[in-house]
Image 1: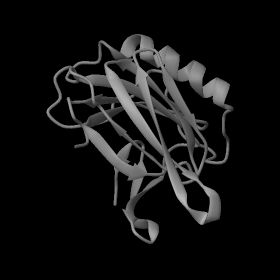
Image 2 (image 1 turned 90 degrees about the horizontal axis):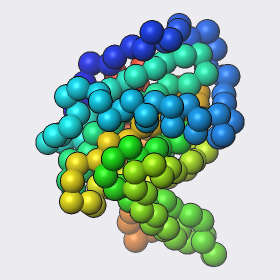
Image 3 (image 1 turned 90 degrees about the vertical axis):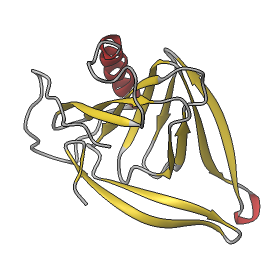
Image 4 (image 1 turned 180 degrees about the horizontal axis):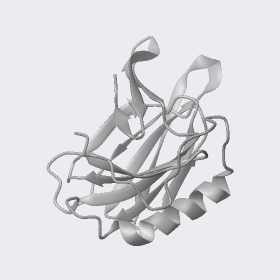
Length: 174
């Protein structure tokens, strides 16, 4: 479900999609937004995963995401964007794919609670799930702005790319 995006007063028009930020800069931005994300209206009792775009600049895009108990996003990447996820409230578990020996793929699951974070670069394939007893809220900051997410299926022959979704200013456009 997509919620109409909100624009912060500091949002600016994009002039270049090739400007990127370092992971430490992304984390600083995400932690700053996380301080106010707990008060975003309409995201306290989600019945499905939903998000709002909270900032768009020429160097990054930021979303606040609400997760119901058991809410999840399937295995996906973020196209050419890297990013950081800061958990504001609740608990999320990230399961990331990692190359193993002999071309095999292994997984690594990491629980992330309020104040914790996950950093990733382009090509990172993972899923997230709220396995906690209460709804969760997180802030996601991408650099450059998120343009695509490709979803993957795990099969006997390995991990197979499925559909690709396209985004503009945090909205699904195709």
